[in-house]
Each structure stands twice: as structure tokens, then as C-alpha cells.
Image 1 (cartoon, one colour):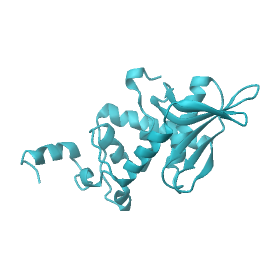
Image 2 (image 1 turned 45 degrees about the vertical axis):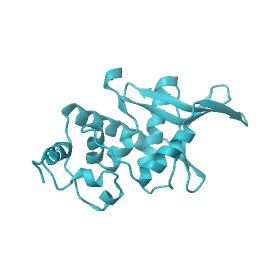
Image 3 (image 1 turned 90 degrees about the vertical axis):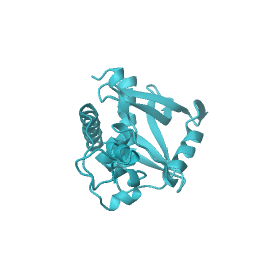
Image 4 (image 1 turned 180 degrees about the vertical axis):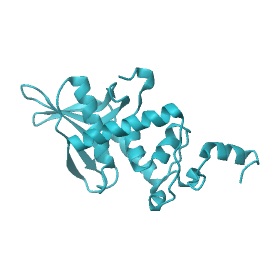
Length: 208
């Protein structure tokens, strides 16, 4: 069990699944750069994450629900958590994404992590979550499988390992880099050096 001081952002699971180096640049070295994709996502979530609730067709939808799992050592905010009025409330986290569905499980891992937080907080079992994509205006149901659960647990553990060691993994300099907002700061060819240390030296006229 992790203490409150040891918790890491749940959103980092998506980053580390995409690229360990990207996650470390953000969470270990404190680098971040906005691009068109991150800016669109930021404004999209600002509209969604307004706290409050609504009720419709027997479903209560809570917005901006704070989440935590001391077992996994993560915390975050669910865009929406739906509660269905039954003998025992059925919970479903719903994550809003500005783009469109992906072949990879990055978004599904985030929803699974939200479900695991809710299970720990509420003492219930959650079998499904959902993703709503702004580009397609459609909802995708996400089954909370044992495979996804194990992936989330392994990725959460890896985040803590890298954070505790202060380690930034080497870059691969591959096709995926073109989709990364940190492409210019990452310097994947700098295999054995910290990107932030490199830029500090560059600013002082010592690098490059």
C-alpha cells in the first residue's frame, strides 16, 4: 500500500504505455510541451470536468469524481462516473477523449485504472467502463478484463520504479515519435544523458 505522498497521476498510465521515456520526461524531469492535440484535449476536458451531477433514465452521472488507489499508488479524476439505481449500485467510469478510437489499448488502460480505483474506494466489482470520443460522437464499452487489470498493475509498478530511481529510459527514435508533443525536447538520440540536463547545458552555452 502506498501513502498519499507516494501517489502518482493515474493519467501517466497512458503516457507510459505509449512510451516510457515520454512518461519520465514529464514526471521525472518535469518537461512538457503543448501541441495541437494536447491543447484540443485540454479544452475538451475543461468543458467535461465541471463538477456536479445529472440524472436520466435511472442513471445518476457524477462529473469530476476524484479517484485514488493506495494499492496501485495512483490518483486522478474521472470525467464521469455513472451510478445505476439497483439493489446494489452498478458503477461505470466514462472517459471523454477529443479524438477517435485507437487500435492500441492506451485509452482502455486509463478507463480500467479508473475502475480499479472505484472498486477499492467503493468495495464493489466493476466489469465495464466506457470511452466517449469527440470526433466520432460515439461511446465504446470497455470490458474490464483480467488482462487489462494486470497491465494496469504492471504499468503502475513500473511508474513507481522509474520515479523512485529518478530514471529516464533511453529513446527509440521511431515512427511513434512523430505523434509525441515532446518530440523536440526528447532527444531520443541522447541515450545516456538526461534531456533536461542537456537543455540546461545548452542554455548556458555548454551544449549543442
